[in-house]
Amino acid sequence: MANSSDFQAVKDRVFADLGLYEQVSGLYDGQWVAGEGRRRIAVHSPINGEWLADVAAAADEDYDRMVERAWASFEEWSRVPAPKRGEVVRAIGDRLREYVESLGLLVTLEVGKTPVEGRGEVQEMIDIADFAVGLSRQLYGTTIASERPSHRLYEQWHPHGVVGVITAFNFPCAVWSWNAFIAGVIGNVVVWKPSPNSALTAIATINIVNDVLDEHGLPPLFFLAVDEAGEIGRRMSSDRSLPLLSFTGSVRTGREVAAKVGERLGRSILELGGNNAAIVTPDADMEIALRGVAFGALATAAQRCTTTRRLILHESLIDSFLPRLADAYRSVRVGSPLEPGVLVGPLINRSAVDSYSSAIGRAESTGGKVLVGNAVLELPGLENGNYVAPTLIEGLAPDSEIVCEETFAPILYVLRYSDLKEAFAIHNCVPQGLSSAIFSNNLREVEGFLSVVGSDCGQASVNTGTAGAEIGGAFGGEKETGGGRESGSDAWKAYARRQTVTVNYGAELPLAQGVTFDVG
Image (cartoon, rainbow, N blue to C red; front, top):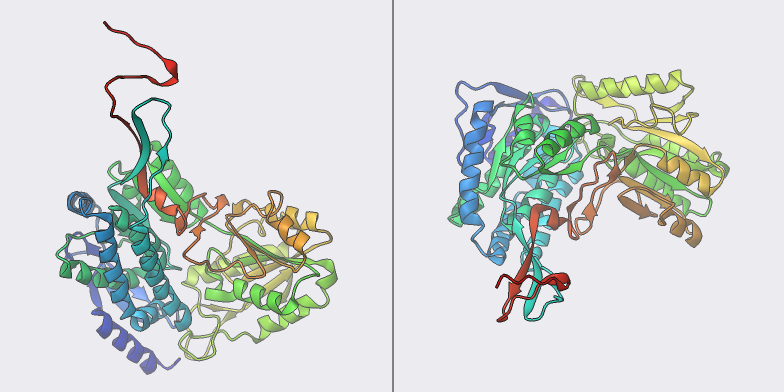
């Protein structure tokens, strides 16, 4: 599929199925805004550098109008009963089922995921839609025993209103759906600013959703603003009319978002960097551990926030497990994700390639030894793509500066340990706290890892890798990862405001805590 004409054929088929064109609008403010006279963002595929389309960007002056229309939609949408809102999300999920192949391939073309991963991204949207449908009938409040006679005390949950969502390129539509479908069934309206690196996927997704809303005679509920310079994102962070802002991205930008939202006493959900580790003990099933570490470290070309970036390996396994992992790294096929058998596709852009090279250089300068990799690849027919060799590095201190940073590229640091207490200390010494894993069949080791002195991450896995998550669990991390939670479990509560209700149905006015107050 490295052939340019084959690539174009896939693009033509996908664009036709999704109703995309090579000149598209990146602004939906209740209707698609024409692109004439607007600054355009050129979208190129990381697979081969070929141009996909030009996207007309949203401008700062569009923002107030878009948010005002979103609030107008909220007035109507919030009055729809929650189970009826769930039926709308069900219809959206059903419509997405018709586009699993084409929308998944668009993800491949635009961000370089393999087709299997692209389809999985769309399937995740469908799964979260199904979850949201059930949730629409389970927005439970708690009834509380009142200390006062003839009083009822309970909690209920209301939508915030208009919720802002800012997403990253690596999960160009799934993370939006985690937020949008859950927020939607609660009664919120959503304003979305996607990464400019995945603008086409966002546009296609909103196109699909809009058709369903139009068929149900509903107002616009999911708004979209694509920009490149980040001005829309800054406006969202500072905007008091967005009670909640969900941000997925780097720790550096997340700090800025948190400060701006906190300054106005708004609420934020922050899904920031991960620097995830897998511990492999002598009691592990080595076949499961090998596959789990390799997938965790290499899936999506290591461009997941849950990617395994540190392997904490018992010293007795250095001469057995590590050579097998090195062989896997040498044999894994890197190339166009459209080619059968390719497991590792391109990085998103040249900046990511430069970060890969810089990180390896820093590692070597501080004593790191490259076991496998350390190459920027120029593949035949893909010279303008962004390909690098998966890299294993040994010999660095666990708390060295480069090991404690997240590099969004396929670099895995191998760190030795002698006893489990040391392994836990190595694991927890980085500032991030998203995903973690241990490979062991020893009950004491496993339970230790899951105890308060074990993994300090929001996600902990046993005998499976750090990468990926099921939608039924709340997703998020601790420390510099941000502390937010999205998707399943009771993460829905972040998209609602809690209200404690007191009802006095008696003929007297008793006060709490035995207080008396007599005005007559």
